[in-house]
Length: 233
Length: 112
Image (cartoon, rainbow over all chains, first blue to last red; front, side, top):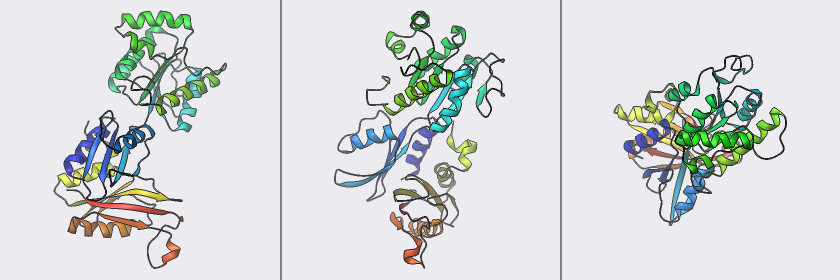
């Protein structure tokens, strides 16, 4: 590998963009493959698989031996709403290997006592997300029920291409939300990406069960990235 | 944001490799490319080494780093990449190995 290639790789990592460093093990020549880039030949399916799984490894293709080193940004779950569901979701997400942060401007909800050891922002999503922008390796779960807190974050998540966007609320609540998101300039295709009611349909009733349903849906979306085309998860 | 300027970069071998090379040092990069059985560091882990034998990162839990560093200094000299393989320490008691019982393959290359 040369310095130019290393710089390109480090830039992608710093910007939380998925990349694979492809090394020809015979001569050490290397190049950076960015997610979404077309690759010809036998390597193409191995590259797609590596982007999905994030597992690095050696493959034989086109009569050569290659090492594919996957550099995927760690997936981050951004929860809008310091509610009971989020209290259950935070430790579950940690166990599953996902970073999680909670944003809620209502200081009565967003207290360190209720969220011990959790990255917590007692501020408006508008303010927090400006400092910590969403990206394709973020999942956004909006669970406040309050449009003036949830809506901005949902629109921001759709614009950022988050791999998962979910919102709490009944179908009736969601119908109104669809109108508001459209008014904010979201396209029909964007709005169709919002999982609402949030979570897998497992009949979840308690806050902890809803958290399981949400986390499972997030994992499903993350692990199927690229299978159904980008943005479809 | 430049990765070489973040606090995490202090421990990030690829950021260190970039910094060292940009500062004019001769640098080698060692990468775990295959593991079998119980291996302490996953495939993709890095160790960065300079011509004086300074290093950062890890390709094992400290078992074989010394040997990799020595080989890396040779690779910096010759410029040709090398594939190293390490197995269980007991098999070859006079050589370094992995006490955990696994085997690893480490690719060592000079950063051009």
